[in-house]
Image (cartoon, rainbow, N blue to C red; front, side):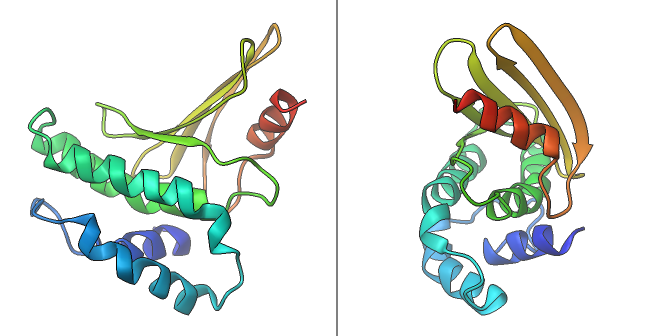
Length: 164
């Protein structure tokens, strides 16, 4: 597990949870920022990450509380939280925040939608496997990467191009 993934799981209080889904993110929210600041010593601006981290917590909490997901899917979601959190806080400066979603497959999804023909979708799983696809005008792109603290340049380029 990468350092960012470990920090993400620990910051969200998920380091030792497996099938004990009786966890509320409201209880963890107050300590999240404090732990992050202690970990990174103010090296990043947390206000820039507030919305996407809040969405991640909300979506995971809803999925874990739902009866619509099997125990296996919930385990995969818990495994994906650390890599997803690390992915969010390693967002390049100036890159827009994605909309965060939980997939029924146990992956965590990210979307940047700026209108017709200008969309980037990405998913990340517990193994740090990032799959992305993009529609930039009439051109389609995509790739599969293993992330560990840095975003793939192809993903950054696609996001930058849909912003133009």
